[in-house]
Length: 139
Image 1 (cartoon, rainbow, N blue to C red):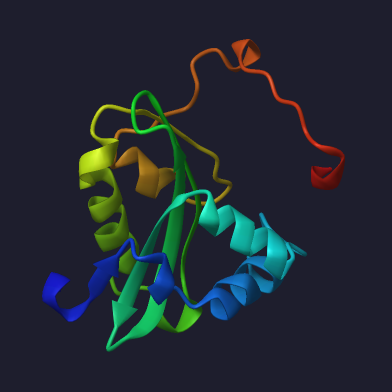
Image 2 (cartoon, one colour; image 1 turned 90 degrees about the vertical axis):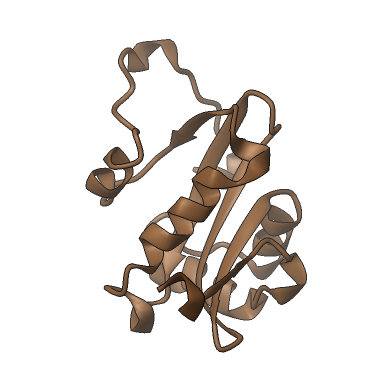
């Protein structure tokens, strides 16, 4: 199946309009995110696009220092390409990326725990030790 799809970290290949539309209108985690916010988030992240015949079919981004920390977010497969194993292909590529081999991972999901458990993720042992600070724009 890998030969059927191309995976790239080249941000010039990303379909920003399509990514923005999905994040701001379809996703449960980024509703209302502006195009400018999507552009800035992509600019400041390591991004992965999956392509079929040059059409973007999936996306994910990683916020990382490439040394000790990586946060996986905005992972999705466009609806018309779901149930084809693309999310597994995408995650395999992300977790084998040369710049991400020594990092500790963090992510947040409301609906894909089973998928991420297959990659070694589990619940935070002591969530009370984690803290958060939200900006006024992220209520």
